[in-house]
Image 1 (cartoon, one colour):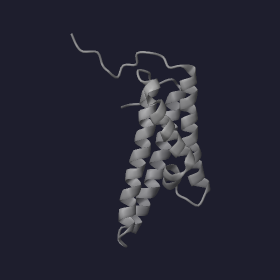
Image 2 (tube, rainbow, N blue to C red):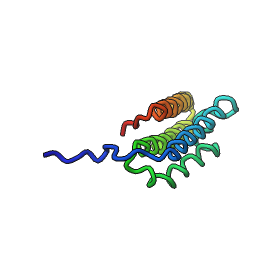
Image 3 (cartoon, helix red, strand yellow):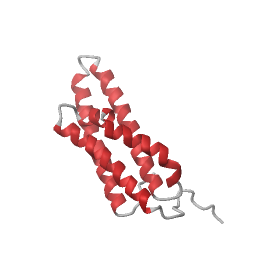
Image 4 (tube, rainbow, N blue to C red):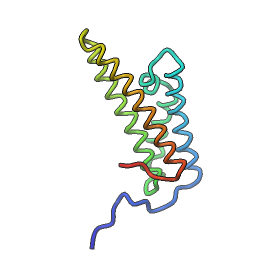
Length: 135
């Protein structure tokens, strides 16, 4: 016999946790919108804007409550999106430290902004359909 897959969803989440996950996506989306409409880039608004910071804190605080549900994959998706975005920002900042790297750093920032927008939209659409995110 084979071992059961530990990623298999064992229980349905409480409706309040589903609403909370929608709210977390809303906070991230609001940060992206601030980056699009404001003077900052999407990536910097996503990392430094209060909505995304609050969203990641909620992700960490409530993560134990969503274990064993498909929402756990969404929480992981949101947390990874935040930390990988920070990594791309650090790499871009290092590129900006050199004159030659400035164009590449700018391209990286714009590309990361598009990537963040894609991940938040993809995750939110999957949540709306009641589907987990890939690990």
